[in-house]
Length: 132
Image (cartoon, helix red, strand yellow):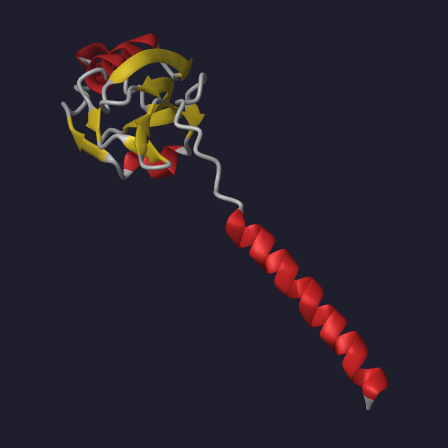
């Protein structure tokens, strides 16, 4: 019986020491915001949009029946405003311009990291589809 209890007590002692050490170590309190914007998936950031203008279909693109998705790389500020916007992919220059004009007016709920608002980098998709 003693041979069984001794290893069990030793394991209990080691486990409790580790648990105490982990409990005594406070989590890092680095309150410095990251130097680079956090990268956030487009689906996540899309759900945080709170306002802005819808894109206007350019008449010439509509006449030529140009449609598709414009992808924009964006940086969203700590206040939820668009700061940096670049076209990543577009089926047409007119659609890209219309997407940029609309997205510049968009506002988002600020993204929080450790409870503090941070800049985020994301991709925004703007779809242009004509009715049949």
